Image 1 (cartoon, rainbow, N blue to C red):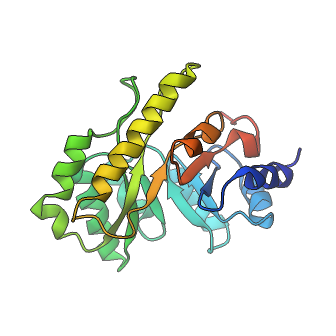
Image 2: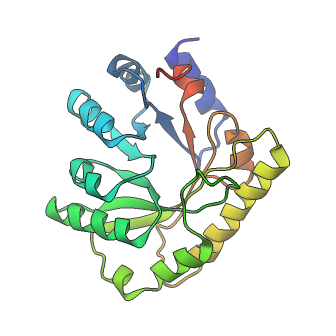
Length: 221
C-alpha cells in the first residue's frame, strides 16, 4: 500500500479525540511530502538536526513534534518552530525550553515524559518528580511553555498484559497531575502508543499516538 493508503487506513481506525503523529525519522523529504499531500500535518522526529533540515525544505504549516530524548544544548536549534516537545524529563530542560522560546517570543507545547517501562534505556521522570516540578516556584514563573500533558513509552516486549499495565499506569499519573491546581484546562494530552501497540494504548486512554513504520514502511538506517 502507498503512504496515502496507509494513512487513510490508520485514520479510519482512530477515534475522533486521538491525534496522529506521523513519525518521519530517517525518512526522506519526498515521503513526508507524500503524507502531507494526503492531508497529514503533524510529523514527529527524534533528532533535532534532522528535524531542522526537514523543516527548512517542507511547507511551513507542518507541526513538528520532537519525540526523542532532548539535550539541553540543542533546544536553541528548534525553538523557532517546534510545536510540541514530548520528551521533557527534567526541570532543567523545561527551563531551557522556556528560555529559548522567550527569545523567539513563542510559547512551546511540552509533555512531561514519565518512566513507565521496566527498561533502563528509557528516559523519564517518576510521578513524584513530576508533582515536585509542577508545585515548584520555578514552574510557576515559566511564561513561554504550555504544559499539555504526559508522554510515556512501554517496555519493548511481546507481553501484552505488561504493556497494558504500563499504559494504565500512565493514565493514572495523568489523572493525578491533571487534578493539581498547577495544571490548566489544556492539560489533556496522553502521548502513548506506537505502530505495534497503538490500539491497546487508545483502549488505555491515549489521546495521541506516534506511528511511523505502519505509515512509511521499515526505517532507513
